[in-house]
Amino acid sequence: MNLRELDLHELDRRALALTGGVVAQVKDDQLPLPTPCPDWTLHGLLRHLVSQNEGFAAAARGAGGSLSVWRRGDLGGDPRAAYEASAALVGEAFAEPGVLERPFTLAEVRDGGSFPGRVAIGFHVLDYVVHAWDVAATIGAPWEPGEELTAAALLIAERVPDEGRGPGAAFERRAPSPDDAPPHHRLLALLGRDPHWTGDPHWTGGPCWTGGPC
Figure 1 (cartoon, one colour):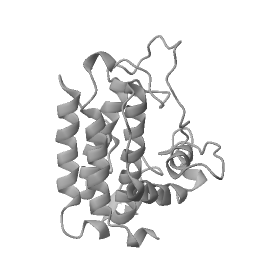
Figure 2 (figure 1 turned 180 degrees about the vertical axis):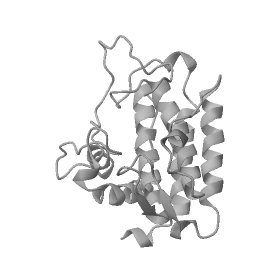
Figure 3 (figure 1 turned 30 degrees about the vertical axis):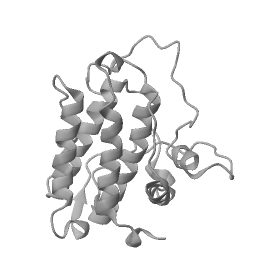
Figure 4 (figure 1 turned 135 degrees about the vertical axis):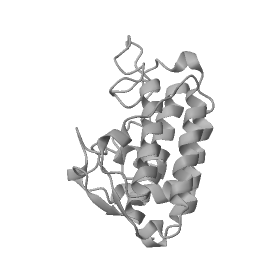
């Protein structure tokens, strides 16, 4: 399997729905919880998801070059509704004819580099499959991407170069993973996650739960 064989429209639809199904289970009193993303509480992570959907939608239409369009996500009084609205926005943008061949300027990736639409949408698929796990792990909900979506996300994750990982980069550094680990564990490890993460019992709060500059 290679990237050109992937039905990225369908995979992205599934990734958005996977994340949406988990986000729908979030309760307001869980928003201050820590997440597998060390810099974000659950509120900060949800704000990131909304911001990224808005940023990718802008990039699909030639307006992704400004960092501001990637960071203005507003959860308002209902994070679940905010996510659904942003998912509809990016889904509509990605459904436009010729989007896979358009150049996407991703202001948060490689200093605002330009990527073919197919590659950029692949990044979005990967991001939302794994962030769905981040939310699910935080609230103790199931995460069930299925074999096909997991395999596609794993294929994309394996192609993220090391220079595109680490502090200030779009993706986390790889974490160790046994060769015989199941595919979903290998996927999480490739994005720097510990598949057995269960939260930090000593966490006492942080700067991101109010959705500030995280």
